[in-house]
Every structure is written in C-alpha cells, then in structure tokens.
Amino acid sequence: MSSKTVAVIGAGLAGCEAAWALANAGVPVALYEMKPKKYSAAHHYSGFCELVCSNSLKASRLGSAAGLLKEEMRRLGSLIVPCAEQTAVGAGGALAVDREKFSDLVTQKIKKHPLITIVQQEVTTLPKGDVVIATGPLTSDGFAKTIRQLCGEEYLSFYDAAAPIVTFDSINQDKTFFAARYGRGDADYINCPFTKEEYELFYHELVAAQSVELKEFEKQGLPVYEGCMPIEVMAKRGADTIRYGPLKPVGITNPHTGKRPWAVVQLRKENAGGSLYNIVGFQTNLRFPEQKRVFSLIPGLEHAEFVRYGVMHRNTFLNSPKLLDNTYRLKKEPRISFAGQITGVEGYIESAMSGILAGLNMARRMKQEPPLILPQDTMSGALTAYISDETVEHFQPMGCNMGILPSTEIRIRDKSQRYEIVANRALESLNAALLVK
Ligand SMILES: Cc1cc2nc3c(=O)[nH]c(=O)nc-3n(C[C@H](O)[C@H](O)[C@H](O)COP(=O)(O)OP(=O)(O)OC[C@H]3O[C@@H](n4cnc5c(N)ncnc54)[C@H](O)[C@@H]3O)c2cc1C
Image (cartoon, rainbow, N blue to C red; front, side, top):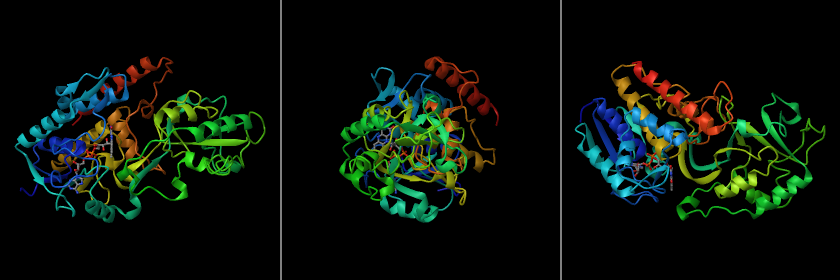
C-alpha cells in the first residue's frame, strides 16, 4: 500500500462515506472492517453500511432537519444518500430503504472503487500514518481499549444516559424564570416552578409512565452510580425523593409569587447559542411518547418542542469538545480523525455526514488545501460545531434538529414557513462555502 494510503477503520455509515470522499479526492484508502469475521451484538449482515435498527433515514422534506441534512450531504458528494434513493421503499414522507439492497449497493460501489482496498480484519492497535476511526457506537472491545489509551480514560463513554433537550423558543417564559440557586453566579438556569398540586399530578404520572425494554446487550455497562439514575427510578423511591434531589427548590424564589416553589425543574443551556436547553437531572428510560406526555406537565414546558428525548443505551462515544477540532481531527494527534456516532453525532445520516466531512478534510489536508469548515447556519456545520464546541460542559450526543440552527432575524410564527426559510438559507450558505476553495 502507498505510504499516502489512509486507513479508515469501520465500514459503517461514517467509514464508507469517509472512504468514498477520500478516494474521490484521489487519496488511496485501506478500509478495515471486522465483519464477517466478527460481529457486534447488533450487527448481523455481512455487507457494509448495515442499518442495525430502523430502515429509515428519516424525513425527505427540505423543511425538516433530516431532509435538509440529506440535501446538504448530496451536495457534499454523499455515497449513501443516492444509494438510499435507489433502494427506497414506500414510507410516506420519509426516505426508508430495503436494508439489504441498500447495504449491497453501497458495498458494491465501495468494492469497485479503484482507490479503495478492503481489509477484512478487526483492528485492535492503531495503524501507522493517517487514520479515520469510524468504528461506531459498538466499537469492538479490543479497539475501544486502544482508543481509551489514545484519548484518555475519562474521555470515552460506553453508555449514554442523556436528559431530554427542548428548544428555548418553545419554553413558556411567562411561567418560568432565569435564576441560579442562592443567586450564586449568573442567572444561567431556566427554572420551572411547581405548586404542590402541580407536583403531585406530575409525580403520579411519572411513576406510572412506561419505560423502554432494554435488550440484553444494552444492559451491559449500565451506569450504576446515583448521578445517572433515571428520574423515574429515583421517583419510585418515594414521593419526595426527587424533591430532595434534582427538583429541590431550596435557594430559589419564584419572582412571580415572591415565594419558594414546592419543587423546581431546572433547564441548562445545551449549546453556545442558547437555542437549546436540557432538563437537568432528567436522564430517563421512558418511552418517547411518555416523555412528551409526562414532561409537558412541567410548568413552562406545556408546549415544549423536544429535539432530543432522553435515552439510556450502549453507546461508545468521545467527549469530542475536549478532543476534536471542527474538522473531526484529534487535536493532540492530528494524523487521526474520528467520524460517526463515536464523535457524538447521533443517527444514521448524522454519522454519514460526519464521515463525509472527516474524509474531505483529511484529503484537503494531505493536499495542503484549506479545510472545509461549514457555516453554522447549515445543518452539517451546526452539528460539527456542536461536537467540537469547547465551551460545552456536559457533552451528550446530538442528532440533527432545527433548534440547533440560528433563528431567522424576524420571528416567523408559522413553523413550517420558518423551517423552509432556514433550510433555504442553509443551502445558500453551503453553496457559498463550497465555491470558496
Ligand atoms: C442498537 C442500535 C440501534 C440504533 N438504531 C438507530 C436507528 O434506528 N436510527 C438511527 O438513525 N440511528 C440508530 N442508531 C445510532 C447510529 O445511527 C448507528 O449506530 C449508526 O450505524 C452509526 O454509524 P457509524 O458509522 O458511526 O457506526 P456503524 O454503522 O456501527 O459502523 C461501524 C462499523 O465498524 C465495524 N467495527 C467496529 N469495531 C471494529 C474494529 N475494531 N475493527 C474493524 N471494524 C470494526 C463494525 O462492524 C461496523 O461495521 C442505533 C445504534 C445502535 C447501537
């Protein structure tokens, strides 16, 4: 293999896109994949780009987050978006695929590319030279150890215990208020105050709500420490347990009443722009419709728009804001880039998008060209900025959503009209960025 060959590890959504982008830029690639010799607990099919669960790449409509992201990917030279379109099955407004035909088509295209060599083996040590690591949320144990040594033990998580995220615009500002406990520091938190009656109703619904059934392999590595306990599990310990925990009202006065509330839910900024907030201490394993129903009983969140629901599942991911730059490169060892779910983007198309950008940027660097850093009003640019934003303290994975994009200058009440304007603005920005070389 040429000394300029890039090793791409993992032929999933991100690895295939990274290999494709590199090879199309004239860079030879050795694509390592452990299947069919070894399978993770969720992979079963021998082809590349296996969709392990749903067969949907989400909405097609341009005025939706997923539709916009796919259109951006198309313009960035995506492999998987056209393959998905060629193997699509009817799914209303979504782009869903025949998963085996989709995988076969991607595999065939990758295998036919003259600059891509397939190496069927599990990687356990780091190859020499330039490397893109795209081994996904279920990276093999042997290689996860190597990544841990490379990045630092505290920077690799094996489990996702995330609280829901809502858009700032959808929080009822008439009921909530900004404040910090005991007035310490800046008034960084949005506080949702409960009366006793509101709390009792909320509590009753929370403990009775339905949870997700975890699969056997997902139970491995379940966090056992109190800090990660699902809110509904903590609530079941007693009617007041959460009122002495994440919902404690001490040190907080409701400016609307001049009194201390019975309980308080706090929301903390999720992104630097302040367009998204997470519900502090609300890591949860409730089913998504149940989260919507029960958490909408929190005063101020009656009409909250959830851009991400809380999840608890196996997920190998880096603390990317501390480790990666905005080209997906490892700051402390720039010959190495990461791509896919392991970087903290979440979802099939998000993983694939990060593979395109990691691959394009590595190719550009090898040719001594300036990096491609997309504007933050594009979906790809916003997600990339999110995973590499050094100011983020409690990093949790993020999928594409309209809340992550800057709002329109003039507030447009109609959501679909607003999203369409935001999407068109994103594509104009992307086109302009692609014109600059
Ligand atoms: C159980 C589960 C269900 C999910 N369901 C959905 C869903 O329905 N919709 C959605 O949008 N997202 C879903 N996701 C999240 C995510 O979108 C997918 O995991 C997605 O496939 C991530 O893409 P990736 O390229 O990062 O990793 P993957 O697609 O998993 O690709 C990684 C590849 O690397 C290979 N590999 C791993 N370790 C090694 C090694 N050491 N050496 C060589 N090869 C290696 C694997 O065999 C695999 O082919 C799910 C995740 C999980 C774990």
